[in-house]
Length: 470
Image 1 (cartoon, rainbow, N blue to C red):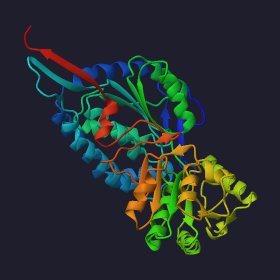
Image 2: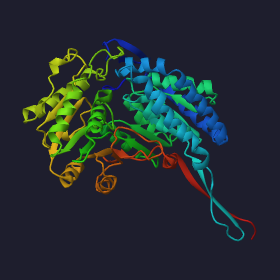
Image 3: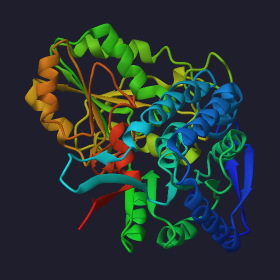
């Protein structure tokens, strides 16, 4: 939110589709916040005693409830944040379902006691106790995908959870609540809150909150960390990226172009792990650039509720203006645009609809190569070899994901050891494998979700050292 609403005030969600008010919600009062915190703490004390198998059954029913309603939920998502309707249901059917079911499937093993080797007269083991109450502060761009990373494993681990959704996508929290209620989750284990920044700060400082998961901006991450730093609690911060791709001389050209165009422009470029800068080996420069431009021109920028639309509006006018400003600045410094925005009739400076753009002649003196653009812009930069690509890829304050496009897996693995990133891809991008740890370095944040390691931050090890006799 760009402002800080107070208790009792109402917050409107303005749809980027047509500028209408799609949702209106009331900010929680201090009394409501207190009631939910107390209920969450009480519910967790009982929920942690429920066997993991029973937790799993409830979470599976929750997942099924949402997946069965993917079409309806997809329409809601499109109205709230602008993604084309041809893609929105897939967030729930594919990514959300895949991540949720994987974390449910591995929970029994990952949450089991860790038995130690036998020792005379002693029984020793380590138990993974739930932390208690988890506060999840989630974004609007992939509201189901980002939230499931914490919601399902937190509850599977025996915690209670309060979800604060982004003001742009508040219905996601309501749908979770409906799904958990349908699934039979005990009252109070999962709750939602609509609050402003000051209230969030106070809630983080509340002694009943045991962990904070945040996905959002670097500034927001600093605010969360400052509040949490007053207490000895953990945080997980995913703060975005400026994710690079390197196209090697031996890349599979057609597939590389197809995947990178999608990696840049999907969701109008509003993806934390979307591709934001591309370095191309000089031997492939012209063929790659020509092919990239040709495919970009095939995008359809229009009302996202139309089935043929492949590029919808950005989330709001402010976001669109920021993207246009970065592109204009780059052009003023010598960058060359390869796409004529006027060919996209829906593009308009007075709306959130932004035409895709491809820039060449860019360098790291331009913000479009160093700051998170979070929009449909592809800056392409020619490089002479792997060493130059490595230096440029690492020349960033961010480190969420990075990708290499090559036919040599051994070379890709070697180069990956030198790249400062949380995830290193070869011949793919903008995807989270739930069996792998999702994490970032530098200003992309800290902490880990998904994979077997994801349960580590949501539990506290407790050692049992039991002597049988004196």
